[in-house]
Image 1 (cartoon, rainbow, N blue to C red):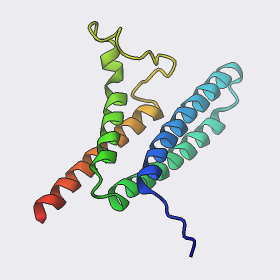
Image 2 (image 1 turned 30 degrees about the vertical axis):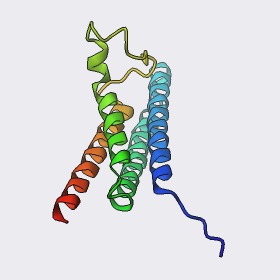
Image 3 (image 1 turned 180 degrees about the vertical axis):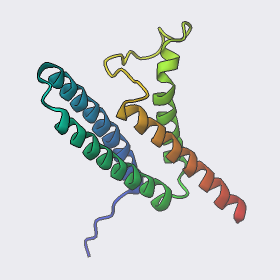
Length: 145
């Protein structure tokens, strides 16, 4: 009986990295398509469909990741805390970067250019929500015992 077991902690951490990579790649794709459209003005319909497909892809990835963290790992507060910290860092980075006291001590990720309309920024918000929900569910389960 050789059974392969999926470690949910490893799957959720890999999913976190994969989701951020997908979101960053989608931002790069949209930036490239917008640049190409500025030169030719012929990609309007393609951009419209790519927006829709990227939104569906990311929504499926967000829901799958939420299911892994909230259903398969309901008592693991370490993964939830990791999701919360990564999500809050992504959400707070644009404001922290402009703070004079912190601007020199933060890692410089200006190449990513986090803006509220970008998929990476939205994914950071979703990660923070998943992490917070995981911590709340863990607290509720421990108080019901």
